[in-house]
Amino acid sequence: MILENIKHVEENINAACAKVGRDPAEVTLIAVSKTKPYTMIEEALKSGTLDYGENKVQEINDKYEILPKNIRWHMIGHLQRNKVKYLVGKTALIHSVDSVRLAEQIEKEYAKADEIANILIEVNMAEEESKFGITAKETEEIVREISQFPHIRIQGLMTIAPYTENPETNRGYFRNMKQLSVDISKKNIDNVNMSVLSMGMTGDYQVAIEEGATMVRVGTGIFGERNYNK
Image (cartoon, rainbow, N blue to C red; front, side, top):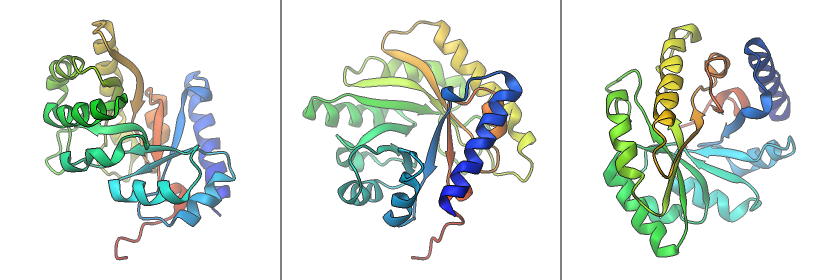
């Protein structure tokens, strides 16, 4: 079932790219495996999918120990400063950097290990009170501040759009995210790359791709509904 689901998602990615004349190779599928057992990831690996997203540092650590080391782990959940040290050397990309204080902690921990942290700046484009992330207006200033840290590379932006039954209602947010990334890119800030735009989830990833997403985070559409009661 998981392999069939991945194939279906990949077909949708290809179709969304075709619709707007994009190369599907520009879009990375992140299989969101949060709350799922490692055995389901082992199944998903048979598809060739190597990018997996987790919400909790502990889950990345637990699965990292068990699963193949060529997996690229993505920290997509809210990151507490006291947990940063557990991500060093294990995480390909931290999607959820939402403050200079968090970036300071990332700099400190990665400097100790003499490693580089690849990060995205999380933007709360819809300005939902229930979500983390900075506002679009704050983004350039925060990008400039974080760009000064020698052990951090900003690779782009991330957003979590509102939950919706109709993906079209999020199109404007995705379009604004793309524009924001283009605007920041034009500033040519040292140490800042805007090549990654992480947006779109199971309900709206096709619309996100049409509007410029380079990474989509699909969980339910691959692994089924989540069980939070374990």
